[in-house]
Amino acid sequence: MLGSTGTLFALIGLAMLSAGGVAYALLFGRISSDNQTDKRIDQIQKRNPVAAAAAKVRVADTNKRRKSIQDTLKEMEDRQKAKAKQSTAPSLALRFQQAGLNWTRRGYYTFSVLAGIVIAAATFFIGLPLYACGIFAAVGFLALPRWVVNFRRKRRIKKFLNEFPNAIDVIVRGIKAGLPLNDCIRIIANEAAEPVKSEFKTISEAQSVGLGMADAVAKLPERVPVPESSFFAIVIMIQSKAGGNLSEALGNLSRVIRERKKMKGKINALSQEAKASGGIIGSLPVIVMGLVYLSSPAYITLLFTDPVGHVILGASAIWMFLGVMVMKQMINFDY
Image 1 (cartoon, rainbow, N blue to C red):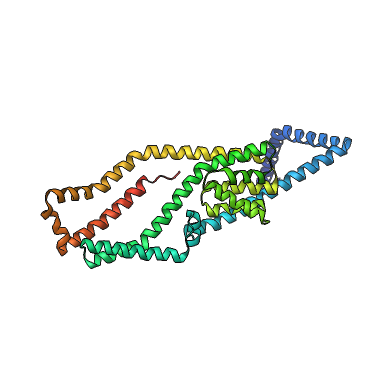
Image 2 (tube, rainbow, N blue to C red):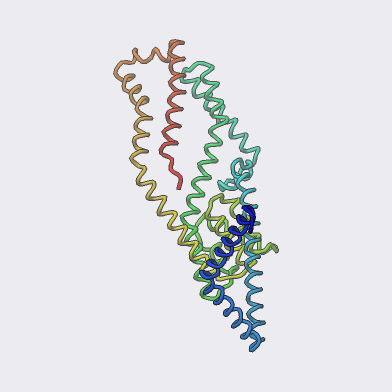
């Protein structure tokens, strides 16, 4: 007779055997089919060793290509991270290049000094106090040149995005017609609209001095920091290292860029009401002050002649600036 402990172990063993039997009964069909599949593969390989060797070569090539694509994507990801860190605070020379300006650092600071002097002189002749002239001079020296560069940069990027899908379509049609990629890029560099023309001309010139296609295109996102140029560089790099149907990949990229443009247009259309409301609310205090000055000049002039009025104007300007920034963030939709 077994004791209580032996009985317990016996019950546990019977339970495990029962569970194993049930699992084997449920998985018997799959196990037998896998075994039959393996047997058939072995038989086919024994009957046709050439086909088996070719299949192994194809599998090895597929694995090698997959590994190459993974390495390429990892390399591009590391580059994009480095470029993202750089794009948050680009250098002054890089911002000039992105804006399409031929300025130098010396010319930029000269323009800043002249802007500060001109604005300070204008505010002084208007009759504002000296501290107000100093504030406007600082704004002209620090903010106005930066605004000009950023304005030119945004306008150039917008023009590039409008023309870039057409350039990709030219490459797709040229490749389908049998032209090499280098010739397609030269066609764009000669016939496309600016700034796509100058950017692809830079790529063509980089190739002419011995730089590879992937390396030449990889510098495009630095000059045009938008996702579309990064996508183009990734496609070219993957195709140069792993091969593939370049025309199909670029055709898909062109379609994606056009869909992004349509989405941006829909977002702008839906946000126009909020933007109009923000513009009206932001300009209303200035308009009211101007109307009051036209109807009752003595009533509103105290703000410009009395020291307390200066404090009120300064505080009002600060609150207006904060309100405009808040409204700008509310109506600035990312896509």
